[in-house]
Amino acid sequence: FVKQADLQRIMGDDPVVHEIAMRLIDPEKVPEVKEELASSFPAQKVEDWGDIQPTLELMNEQFDISVGIFMGIIIFALLFGILNTMLMAVLERRKELGMLMAVGMKRGQIFSMIMIETLLLALVGGALGLLVGWGIVTYYGVHGIPLSMLSEGLSSMGMADVVYTKLELPYYIQTVVMMMLAAAIAAIPPARKALRLKPVEAIRS
Image 1 (tube, rainbow, N blue to C red):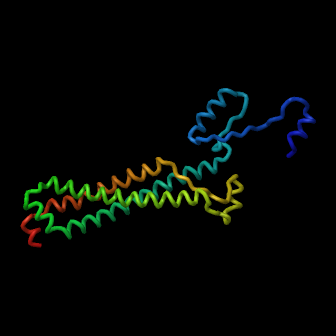
Image 2 (image 1 turned 135 degrees about the vertical axis):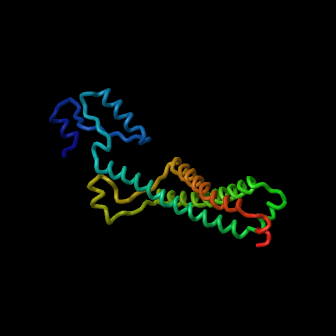
Image 3 (image 1 turned 180 degrees about the horizontal axis):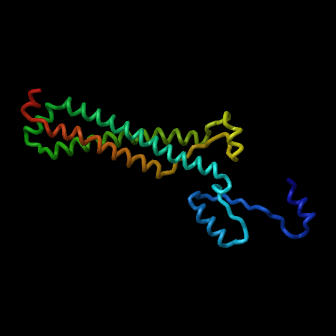
């Protein structure tokens, strides 16, 4: 390795540049910019970070798959948690539900009431969870997570031993949508159980 100024004195007036590195603000535009550069400079070799570090690209793809599986497990557990909560709420309020049916409340209204109650429960709990999660991500996005034990392996791939967390808005939206779908599915069995209640028996229970 030599300084460009020293090499320039030997090579003469022609500019000595063997590599130009570009860092984009939006990582999603990397394929588009790569294709544009390759068509504009066909005699030059144009590579993105995945071409230079295929191992790192594979790790990134595996991480996305792992996050998807992890989120699926969490949503699955959330589904059963909401199901258990709402089922207990229906069983504990059998008398009240029976009385509502006795005074003329329709079964469709009972079903809608339980569904709305479940969705509101999930919405409030999800909002608090997202707020806490956003705070943790923001904190470690500023201070970073030290990975000094893996510094040697990370440095071999050109990565720092401190990871700064960051989540884009689509991840939060996706989480909310998945959570609300899980809540809607979990609300169906308790709502159907409430519909099977007989007003006279429920009031006497």
